[in-house]
Amino acid sequence: MVHRPVRIVAGLAALVLAVAACSSSATTAPTAAPVTAAPVTAAPVTAAPATAAPVTAAPVTAAPATAAPAAMNATMIPKQINNPYFDVAYKGAQKAATDLGGTVTQVGPSAADATQQVPFIQTATTQGASAIIISADDATAVAPALQAAMGAGIKVVGYDSSPAVGAYNVFVNQADTAGIGKGLVQMACDLAPSCTGEIAVLSASQTATNQNAWIAAMQETMKDPKYKGLVWDGVVYGNDDPQVSTQQAQALLQAHPNLKVIVAPTTVGIVAAAQVVKQAGKTGKVFVTGLGTPKGMAEYVKGGQAPEFALWNVTDLGYLAYAVAQDLVNGTITGKEGETFTVKGLNNDQPYTIGKDSVVILGPPFVFNKDNIDKYVAEFGF
Ligand code: RAM
Image (cartoon, rainbow, N blue to C red; front, top):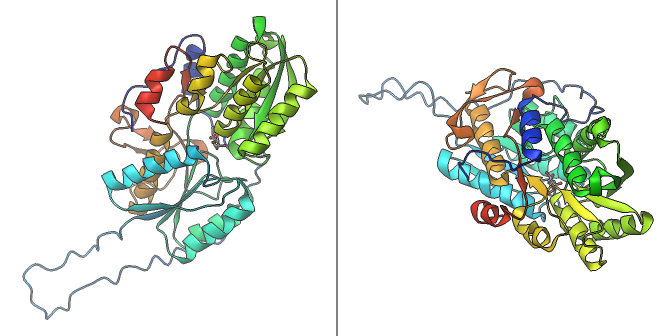
């Protein structure tokens, strides 16, 4: 976990910071229907058999009336298990479990597919996990299973990609949604010659709450006359699959010979796009930006394919998600708007405040370029 104050570099910095300061909550796709609340039959949280010692059993110190809360045991369900991004978040959650107590286990599908997430939610529910920490592949598809879990007394924390409102207790957003959208457009503007020309988006899956919210925020940003020189070529989906992302990036180059920038708001897609640009001999003609890990992108920052991109501290994201789950399990927070809590080592030890739709924001993202990439690779380790 990195404890340093967040730093953002030059041009984009002011913008991202300014926007990040605004509150968000566009996190869940606006279409995400409010899920019909399952009867929240106050969890059969098997009230730990109040080991009230038999009165006659004369030991001097009577057992404390309030039984210690059961040990926290969380199940973490990423969009998919073979995406290095989620392994980093899992490491953060494991670190939190070591620091704060309890355990966390990651399970999930090998493809970013919500229907494949559902059985993992159901299993965690029958096994009596104390919390489920999930990055949703589809906000509504996972909602009924999550609500059933909540009905059984399990605390649900969304992280990275939000389940529908009403199907989680708290959603830990990595950064302000509108801020990310603005940042993505600004980086495309920085890279397109004189902020002019065609841009296209290479996204993750078509149902991903987070990418869809960021793309919507990008389109909103593009209305600003400042970006009138940019032409929107549309969105393609690589499903956070390296092969599909590569094919989609290649198809973009073919379909749009005048393309200037590929914006990939996915750690899998951005690497694939940068590789394709390099291999196609388009370095210096087509630029790539978006959201990527410093380690995965260092080569392309230095090679000129992706001079600028952004991300947050993914380890901290996993750490925060676990800490929130534990606070919910312990009952120190309930997920209500306005509640505050502190996580030692994060946010400069200052309190986080739960916002609208029970969303907590990790903090503003970082922008990487050739001047700072090595430092961040060393500092973040991912
Ligand atoms: C991919 C996933 C994840 C997203 C990052 C930026 O790894 O789609 O959900 O937050 O990219």
